[in-house]
Structure formats: C-alpha cells, structure tokens
Amino acid sequence: QVQLQESGPGLVKPSETLSLTCTVSGDSISPQYWSWIRQPAGKGLEWIGRIYPSGSTNYNPSLKSRVIMSVDKSRKQFFQFSLKLSSVTAADTAVYYCARGGYSWNYWGQGILVNVSS
Amino acid sequence: QSALTQPASVSGSPGQSITISCTGTTSDVGGYDYVSWYQQHPGKAPKLMIYDVSNRPSGVSNRFSGSKSGNTASLTISGLQAEDEGDYYCSSYTSTSTPVVFGGGTKLTVL
Image (cartoon, rainbow over all chains, first blue to last red; front, side, top):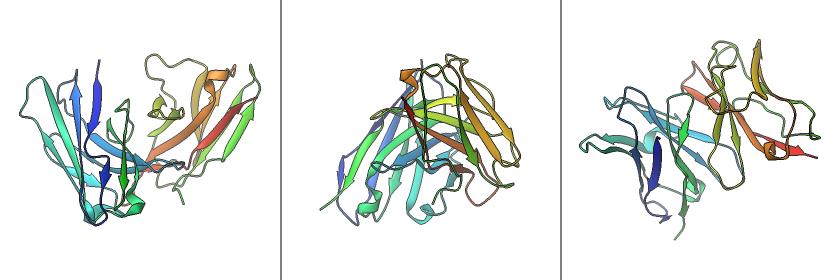
C-alpha cells in the first residue's frame, strides 16, 4: 500500500522560505512523476510542480521563479522528495499536498497546512 | 480564474443521476485524452475517481463514469448517494506553459 506523508513547519514568516518533505513508503521510486499541489482555504487546487526520479522538474510558471523541488533516493525502505518555496507571502498560505503522478494523481498525502504569518 | 470551467454547484436527489461538466480548449481537454476527476470531502485529500477521460481506478464505484466531447469533459454519477456529496475537480494535461491545469471545482449537494 503506497503511503505519502508531508512534513515541515506549519508556520513560516513572510519573505522566508517554505520547506516541505514528502516521505513515500510502500512503493519503490519507480519511473513516474511525483507532484506538489496546494489548496488555499475554501479555494480550488493549484498545481505547483512535479519531479521525476532523474531530477527533471516542471514548475507552474506562476511560481517557477520561487520553487525548487528535489528528490532523495538514498534510503532503501522509502524515499523522499522536497519542495522549497522562497519569498513567501500570505497568498502562499494553503494546505500543501504531495501526490504520485505527473498529470493525474492516484495517491495523495493527507496534506499539511502551512500558514505564512509574522 | 481557473483554466478549466466547471459549474460552481450541482445538486440531485438520492438515486438520481447528475453530470458535472469541465470545459477547456483544444490545448487541453479537447486535444488530449488526459482528463481526470477528483472527489474531495471536507478536510480530506482529493481522491482520484476517473483518469484518462473514462477510466476508473480500482476500488472506485462503477456509478462514476467519465466522457468527453470536443473541449468539454463530463463526470456522471448515477444512483446518487449521500456519501457522494462533496467537491469535484477536473484536471487535464495541457500543451501550454504548464503541463497540468485544474477546474475551479464543483460542489455537489445530495438533497
């Protein structure tokens, strides 16, 4: 059973960098994309970007200048992929999801609420 | 403003069928058979219900079906049940600057 779990700070100060990690268990880092998607409270889903195990990435153009994704394949039992979003503002406050897939997502993490506030 | 257009809300009575539309362009919905649908309950992560226009993942009820005509994709739920109430989102592969776009979401109310 594939499981994804987001982790990271729930509170980030404006202008700082939001850093989240997604830990994947029950699945090998098979050749498929891994994505980050976010959802502001009461609003719709926004695709942030995706990463392939090779390290190849695609980002939402609206966030591209502030986003970096990476993957850690060093562990055998599980692997992790990460999201860094720099220069955050209140508009970046949202629930952040990690998910398996590139353009459709069949496994999702439970989501992590990140508040941007001083 | 979302790239794909969905109705803000739909409703139906138990046992009835409803259809949610998702309208895009030839650069996304109309150009590729990569439309997906997600169900989301309050406080929960989205759940994949349909992928590649009309395919159901294992474990998803056959009451859910997907189709596409031109630039509009549709999700049909037959035999509506109370547990179907929630938000539904469509997404599509796109040939524009971002490979994926979402619809704005549709709130389904079971009367």
